Image (cartoon, rainbow over the protein chains, first blue to last red):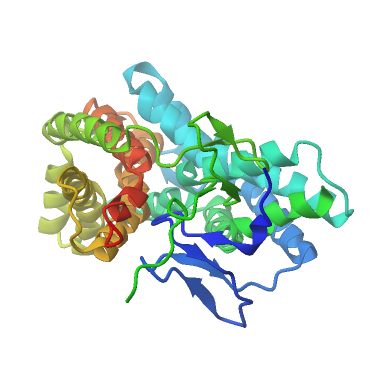
Length: 203
Length: 207
């Protein structure tokens, strides 16, 4: 049963009903009951969002192809990558943290970037992406478990920790990861209503 | 401030996935969002019970995660296992207090805050309390916001173990504590996700 639904905005945290208002620059809509931020103004066009997503995809590629940090000591060279760190834990009895690390810091960010690319490329062609509904639901569900920023802080802590007695060299991968974190944060500011409007526009 | 109109009292239901507002089906049959096909719930079923169960699991797992070593580091002078708190203390003593603070906040303070916050919210839900609803909802948001930062130590241990592979000079290996620690983070996250903050507002002034 479809209401003239898009006219109402419900706070997901307290269930208060709101009538959405048009937001001006730097404005945001706040729930009158609980103070939750319901919507932020953004003026991104589909083209701009696609550009940000392509940039994120490239950063993800670089961040995983190049080491985050390397150590050269006594003729031995070691390096750390996101995937390498997860693989190391997957061995033996540390499988659980290995799986959580692989999923939350590698697979889900990859999935999110892939889904955003899929949805936005079709939006740019002014067509409805096949499986748009499933893609948007998957984006929503995977968000709490996607943790690129935690990996970034962890990498910085590890560098500072080790550099007190070893010479640790930050790698290109670390810069790519930092940029990826910023890009994903910007993309996460786009409210879900925008994404679902793609479904309605196409329907 | 007067109470706002809420979807339940208006005979409506909001989809928790896409936000679409639907008319409530009166006879209690399961209904699905017409836009994203998510099953619609007035409130998440057994929300407080599930949240409490995962919270108790997390508190139990928290004990071995702090008592067991999370990492083993060997150097020229032999090897040493360390727990999270020992790691924090050694940074503190070594003068690296910013790092000590970051690890302490992410690994000790954040889980403890989550236990207290979720515990408080669940307890007030059982008491059908009307107290400080806005602040309790803000507390819930805080739990959601800080939740996953506790994974920090898992990342640090994994990266350190990947980098320190110099047999005889310096080598690091993960230890069992990190498994429990990761389990604590996952359990508290599931606990927070099962908790439906809309319940806080259900014993409102309109009753």
